[in-house]
Length: 310
Image (cartoon, rainbow, N blue to C red; front, side, top):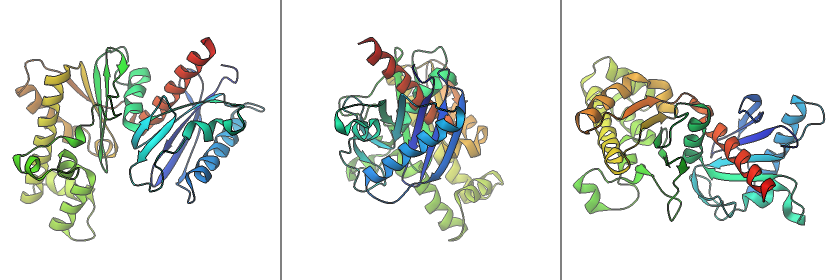
């Protein structure tokens, strides 16, 4: 690469994380700030200025030739457009590539790769994380919602509508199938919003999700029953994933896993192995909250290489 540095951007409804790395994926500088207000173009222009400011702090006169940006929504990476973003109204059909590349005048200053955040996390884990050297694996993010990315034969599987591998939409009960709708699915049972609602119901209006997990680990009967059900639903989903895709590894990441780790995952692993013919490995993310942003960088690096060779 000409500049020697790549940028990764993780843009969410609440926060933006920006990082600068070398071409080996080693982060040299980073910045974290609340998602600005304004139009998508205003927000993206501020993010772009932050990238330029950060890279100049790494090396005098340095610049970014390629960046990756990831968002929690439906992203068309070939068109460089986000179709919709979870919890960010007004972001339908935003041309991320054009705005961030500086290409409005027809003179593209830098290459931009766009992707869904869970897909990018899968790429990140395959580059420098838990899935190094693997060709078939699945990344599952447990946080406010549930995201997932699927890699088959070394390639990201996006699907016909950029929803490939989105296990959040799995119907888990006959009642959910009968009711229908996006809110009746795995995410509605085990996602962060569901956990927060349960915490309030069992522990009071000021309780947090972490309080609910703590109560479950301490043996509080209702909280323990809730946690057991969460683990069973997650195991059911992973069993289905393993039956359909036969991955070498299923990686769990996201804020909930970062906080709970083995206490949450170990019973899930036991249930999965009880119900699958092959003991597929289940592990916690090695990259943690950096998985998405490192994946964004790898996608930018790969795209830059394709463009240079074209």
